[in-house]
Image (tube, rainbow, N blue to C red; front, side, top):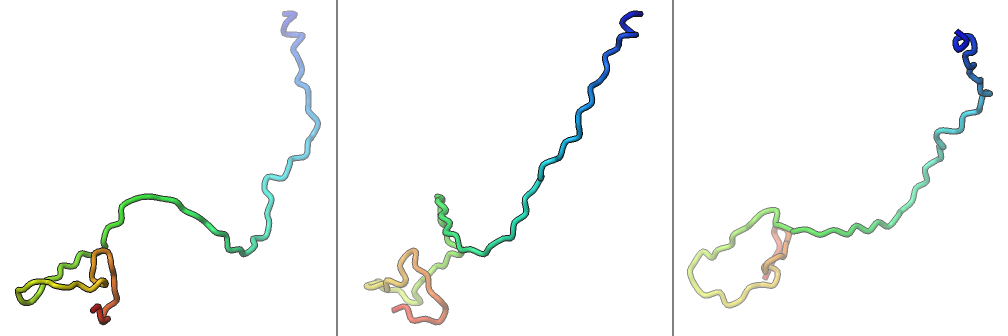
Length: 78
């Protein structure tokens, strides 16, 4: 019975001021330089098969038509 009569009392803490949770600032326009390093495999978007209308020996190919090149429609490639 003596234990029940001598219960501990909770100490009350003084009120405290809460800190700022977020800090809002005005955004400024800028042009940062961003460098992205990556690696991977490059593949063509569309394969095109070129063939001659007549048979014969190919003696010259324009550098503009070599592998890996690209060009716009209706341009001269010779």
